[in-house]
Image (tube, rainbow over all chains, first blue to last red):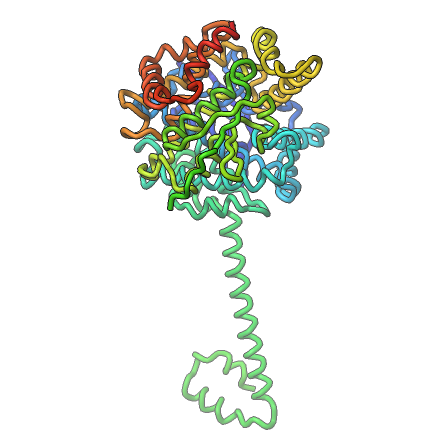
Length: 312
Length: 263
């Protein structure tokens, strides 16, 4: 039953296998169900993504949306859900609808519509992975589509203005995160110990919010206050994607290291300055240091190396 | 502290006999069911321009005291602020489930209803256009309904439903009904023995689907496949709508009117 299946999807950064929520969902599901997929990351080649990414090609069939791709994988007997009861299957559908209605608008806004985020992070990242000259056009198109989607599903006709809608979508998203956290509780995955479709979808939506470093991060900060969701993402990354946890928030680790380094440098500089000051003081004629140093040298021997340096 | 609910609370929707469409009727019935379940009396006022009066552009909306609130979600919160709530007895996980299922109904059922009304050409020509603009003279009626159709089609395109065929949409409705049926099981209501806003929402949509005649019966057939859902609708209708002495109970009048007008 091992047909060769190839998945075209966006690549990843910041410790994630992919930055695109839908691609990430499909990748996660493939890992959970053990489906052998060869990943074809969209890069700077001329094979431009025609609209819908991720795309699964298997021999002759080409399938494009995540829900359809998951259906196809299930038909190929790669099913992560066979242990679920009927009610849990129904719950899966309901929670996926919740994610799409409440969390997705805020996710799209953070990535594609928020001006600082878009200009400094999203656009350069995506543009670097698409061939010129499409790289000039495609990120803009994706941004417009995201804005359109937010306004049409959340905005109030006939004016469709963004400012009224922004506050509401972030409120909805934070509420959605709270609900997910309550539903997850202390268990490892949403339905017991084995990950299922719902885990794939939740991971696909949460991981980009959690890991990608944006200038404006209100959603990420809210997510970090829900430790069980963060643990959920980290668990999946370490167990299924074999990425080391130390790489998980590289910027966080790096800033900590950098701070530590700066601190040690400062301390060293300070101690050097102090030594030099001591030097000057002891060399100055008013201070009768020699007796002291002689005494110390006589008594201490090797330990006090700065004092050794002091000795003329 | 429960604030007093005024006597003259009114719920506005479009004209029941000639104008209102499937999706709007479903939303309106859901709000009426919810208010009935909370024991809050409200009279239904039908106005041709209800959509334009509404603060968010969507029907139904309620006018309580000097406040106007539209759509089920904000109405539930408004009623809760007044001290009445149906979902207080649920724990956190159940509340999360309830919200998730409400989104499922909005996401799949409501969108499917909108699709079938506005993007299926036969239905649009024969039912939607005549009904939507009926209170207005020509050419205003055609202009308004084309404008609304264009709006709905834009929304469908943005969420990726534009390329779907009616058959795929009906399959989605089936999946949604299956999920609801499995969740309901053999219980009288979705959570415990008490109805919640989820029950009101599901009742609103399913009852409207069951009692509205469209070009074909496919949509109502999908719901009829699940006997516990039809029993659920009948139960809520008997409990909350049949005792009403008001001029025309929402359901009894709607059924023959819709059947005769929608052919």
